[in-house]
Each structure stands twice: as C-alpha cells, then as structure tokens.
Length: 217
Image 1: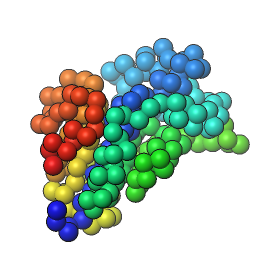
Image 2: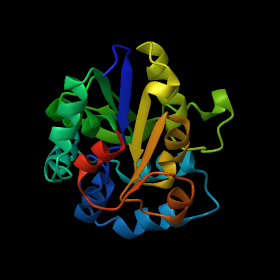
Image 3: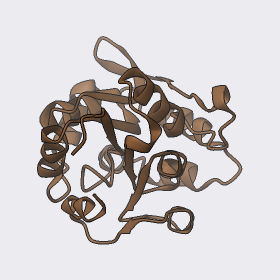
C-alpha cells in the first residue's frame, strides 16, 4: 500500500444495507403505492421526486425513521469491508439520496468518516414534509439532476481530504450512483438494480457480499 491519501464512498440503500429505507417507511404508513408511482414517473427529474416523496412523510416522527433503519440488516460483510478500508488508510464515507437521520445511524455503526444525504426538515421531532437537498449537479453541469449529485460530492470530499481522483473508489447499485461510479478511479456497481448502471459500469459485483470488492484491489 502507498502512503498517498485514498478515499472510498458507498451508497447506502441496497449497498451498505440489504434493503431500502423508503420501502420500509412507506409500507408502514400505507403510502408505498404512492411512492412507487412517483419513483416510476419518467416525466419527473430526480430531485423533484425527492421533494414529492418527502411531502408524503409529513407527520412521521424522526424516531420512527431511526427504528426503520435499525430494522434493515447490513449487507453481508459491510462492517468488515469498511474496517478493511480504514485499516489500509482510506477515508470512508456514505453518499446517499436517503435521509441524514438514517445515514447518521449507519455511519455511526460502521464508523465512517463522513456521510452526505438529504435532510428532512423537522419540527418538534416530526417531519414537516419539506426536505433540504444537497444537489450539486447545477454547479458542475452533471446530467443526473437528482437530490444529491454523487459525482459532485465525491469530488467535494476528495478535495477536502486531499485525495487525487485516481485514488477514489465508489460503490453503488442504482441509476443515481452512475455519475460517481464513472467519476471515481475505481467504480463498482454492486448488485445493480437497473439496466442503465449495468450498461455504464465496467466493474460489476452480482453476489450480495461486499467482501468481493477486494477482488478489484
């Protein structure tokens, strides 16, 4: 291993955890079909979908979101792979289009160095239906148009920690992860969920075991 600073970023839902927070919450509150309809609407930009889904969560307690994320198991060997990267000198992080409430739980359990996510606005511990989105695509003309441009935030954290792009790794599973997977020195599609990410990824892991990342090191 070299002494140069290195960085690895993970998507959260479907990558570090074996499930998706919004599915758990929406099923509990009987809004699953509405969430699916928003997610499937090809006329909406990604960030707009995030706004609409957040509006459906109005009235949910923050504590219930924590309970929901706690109910989702980690992906196989999530803790081991994060520990491996930390032992080998990597800055570790999570970049997710989920919510800070949930990402904070996962980041704390895995002891990652940072996380970036959408922030649900709360009043007295209850979701108002509004959301603060990190965006970023508008600053670099990225075509993703989602609530958190993962390429922008990969670049942000690599600059923050003094890591060259060739020493970055990005792992994700959906269309929203494509821009960071293509940007990173090593991009890996993990258990990819749609044809677009398969088509645009050179490195693909089809087995639900994060230790397989080591095959690319």
